[in-house]
Length: 262
Image 1 (cartoon, helix red, strand yellow):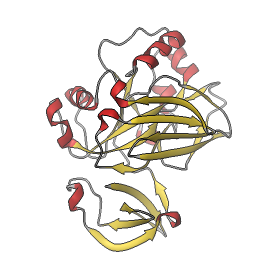
Image 2 (tube, rainbow, N blue to C red):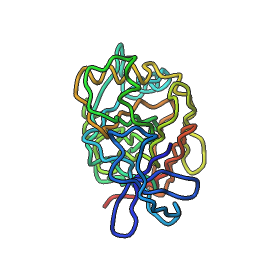
Image 3 (cartoon, one colour):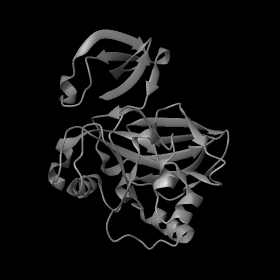
Image 4 (tube, helix red, strand yellow):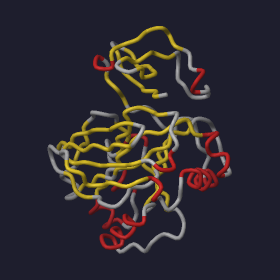
């Protein structure tokens, strides 16, 4: 099931995607089994509503260098050694933006802003210290993400908060897919229609259950929290006017345009 968050008229609601229609839900879907969501009976053409970021998380927990090829290219760019365990960092909730929204390039503060296409995990219930074999029980669904990064600031600062934390630097969407297996999904990132990244999630050094277990040992995860699982090789710069799309097999495509921030 695909569940989206959308704006219609003067309100915001969740809805289940039914082909070209979106069926409005009562309240929010978290804490409810995906197959047991309650519908209001209202349906709208998807083309006539605005899809929003599918969640407003309390936090975005991201994993760095979780694909071998990307780890190698970061070693060349930033002189980072390959990780011996998952590398975690946080992106603020204010960095989250939705499908079709603009990525604001803070040109006065950075000279290089990169795309990083990723699989995102949406947590469905409060949890901590989750064993890998129970990870599926706490996951609501999956979506596409772009872990936008000011690469020069990442190298200059020695830590990643500023480089990863600008407003609009975490596009996610277009919806949450509750019925997919994340173990071996194709992931492709394009810039202006040209393929820049292409990999499968089976190439991750640490798979989704391992990441949920590792992260939940550190911090309590809340419904709607987002886990970014890392990007494959092929990251590169974006510029004003570029259209960047992240497509993940069985989930969908997230597309955003880059604009200069005054």
